[in-house]
Image (cartoon, rainbow, N blue to C red; front, side, top):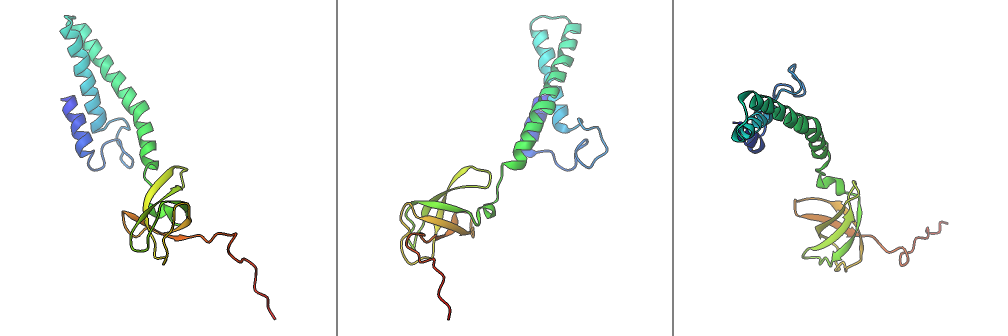
Length: 173
């Protein structure tokens, strides 16, 4: 039964405001996942001792101990880590806007290429990119990510090379 509860919680998730979750007045450790984990530990611990020919009382103690250990491990150690990872693992493609990167596969005006850049979390990212510039952006070109209009492509514009661009201010009369 515990295994069925855990698998069900993994596939379907915990629907609604479960007992003990944020915003409820229940016990903080009482949830479907915790109860299923305890039931799994209880059955596994008791079943293992019984299969080895242990006494009923020893099997009961082993069952309660296994349930407690599994709940402490999953709820106390594993769950906080997983929740912290879940909170920071998804970055919207909109977070890429304004970043600069380098062309790794040439980008033609009527097609797509690839760029590499570092996201706001410091991870190296490769993504398909398109441009509206009239010339091909060759490999190694520095680009500015200006839009993320779909799920597959980033829109980029080339960054003029400072050695070939005249950055002098015009003279005024």
